[in-house]
Length: 100
View (cartoon, helix red, strand yellow):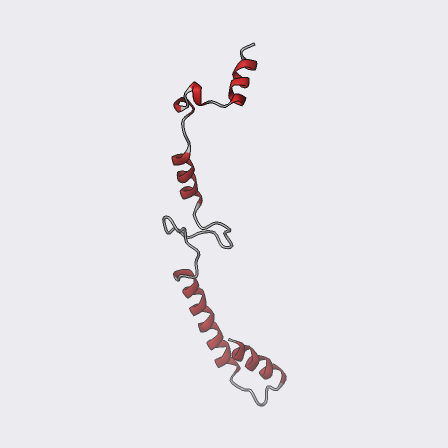
Protein backbone atom coordinates (compact mmCIF):
# COMPACT_ATOMS: atom_id res chain seq x y z
CA UNK A 1 0.00 0.00 0.00
CA UNK A 2 2.83 2.39 0.81
CA UNK A 3 4.44 1.64 -2.52
CA UNK A 4 1.25 2.52 -4.39
CA UNK A 5 0.90 5.77 -2.46
CA UNK A 6 4.54 6.60 -3.14
CA UNK A 7 4.11 5.84 -6.84
CA UNK A 8 1.04 8.10 -7.03
CA UNK A 9 2.85 10.89 -5.23
CA UNK A 10 5.83 10.58 -7.58
CA UNK A 11 3.46 10.53 -10.56
CA UNK A 12 1.96 13.76 -9.28
CA UNK A 13 5.39 15.38 -8.91
CA UNK A 14 7.18 13.73 -11.85
CA UNK A 15 4.37 12.70 -14.19
CA UNK A 16 6.64 12.33 -17.21
CA UNK A 17 8.49 9.42 -15.51
CA UNK A 18 5.59 7.71 -13.68
CA UNK A 19 2.91 7.23 -16.29
CA UNK A 20 0.84 4.30 -14.95
CA UNK A 21 -1.35 6.41 -12.66
CA UNK A 22 -4.61 4.69 -13.61
CA UNK A 23 -3.10 1.26 -13.07
CA UNK A 24 -1.82 2.32 -9.63
CA UNK A 25 -5.26 3.72 -8.68
CA UNK A 26 -6.89 0.49 -9.84
CA UNK A 27 -4.48 -1.61 -7.73
CA UNK A 28 -5.09 0.65 -4.74
CA UNK A 29 -8.87 0.18 -5.11
CA UNK A 30 -8.52 -3.60 -5.34
CA UNK A 31 -6.24 -3.66 -2.31
CA UNK A 32 -8.62 -1.48 -0.28
CA UNK A 33 -11.57 -3.77 -1.11
CA UNK A 34 -9.53 -6.84 -0.18
CA UNK A 35 -8.54 -5.30 3.16
CA UNK A 36 -12.12 -4.23 3.95
CA UNK A 37 -13.52 -7.68 3.12
CA UNK A 38 -10.81 -9.40 5.14
CA UNK A 39 -11.51 -7.24 8.17
CA UNK A 40 -15.25 -7.85 7.98
CA UNK A 41 -14.91 -11.64 7.72
CA UNK A 42 -11.83 -12.33 9.71
CA UNK A 43 -10.50 -12.99 13.13
CA UNK A 44 -9.56 -9.33 13.46
CA UNK A 45 -13.07 -8.61 14.75
CA UNK A 46 -13.11 -8.96 18.55
CA UNK A 47 -15.58 -11.62 19.64
CA UNK A 48 -17.26 -12.53 22.92
CA UNK A 49 -15.23 -15.26 24.62
CA UNK A 50 -18.45 -16.89 25.83
CA UNK A 51 -20.81 -16.93 22.83
CA UNK A 52 -18.61 -15.76 19.94
CA UNK A 53 -20.76 -12.78 18.90
CA UNK A 54 -18.82 -9.82 17.47
CA UNK A 55 -18.00 -7.18 20.08
CA UNK A 56 -18.10 -3.44 19.42
CA UNK A 57 -14.83 -2.02 18.12
CA UNK A 58 -12.49 -0.92 20.92
CA UNK A 59 -14.52 -2.92 23.46
CA UNK A 60 -12.77 -2.97 26.82
CA UNK A 61 -14.48 -6.21 27.86
CA UNK A 62 -13.99 -9.74 26.56
CA UNK A 63 -17.69 -10.72 26.76
CA UNK A 64 -20.81 -9.19 25.22
CA UNK A 65 -23.52 -7.39 27.20
CA UNK A 66 -26.02 -10.27 26.99
CA UNK A 67 -23.46 -12.80 28.34
CA UNK A 68 -22.55 -10.33 31.09
CA UNK A 69 -26.23 -9.94 32.04
CA UNK A 70 -26.75 -13.70 32.03
CA UNK A 71 -23.68 -14.19 34.23
CA UNK A 72 -24.93 -11.59 36.73
CA UNK A 73 -28.43 -13.13 36.83
CA UNK A 74 -26.93 -16.53 37.65
CA UNK A 75 -24.90 -15.02 40.51
CA UNK A 76 -27.81 -13.18 42.15
CA UNK A 77 -29.38 -14.83 45.18
CA UNK A 78 -33.08 -14.09 45.68
CA UNK A 79 -33.74 -11.95 48.78
CA UNK A 80 -36.22 -14.57 50.05
CA UNK A 81 -33.44 -17.21 50.09
CA UNK A 82 -31.57 -15.32 52.82
CA UNK A 83 -32.72 -16.53 56.23
CA UNK A 84 -33.10 -13.97 59.06
CA UNK A 85 -30.10 -15.48 60.85
CA UNK A 86 -27.91 -14.81 57.79
CA UNK A 87 -28.80 -11.15 57.49
CA UNK A 88 -26.22 -8.59 58.52
CA UNK A 89 -26.54 -6.06 61.31
CA UNK A 90 -27.10 -3.38 58.68
CA UNK A 91 -30.12 -5.33 57.35
CA UNK A 92 -31.46 -5.64 60.89
CA UNK A 93 -31.13 -1.89 61.45
CA UNK A 94 -33.03 -1.22 58.23
CA UNK A 95 -35.87 -3.46 59.39
CA UNK A 96 -35.88 -1.80 62.80
CA UNK A 97 -35.96 1.78 61.43
CA UNK A 98 -38.57 1.02 58.81
CA UNK A 99 -40.74 -0.66 61.44
CA UNK A 100 -41.31 2.60 63.38
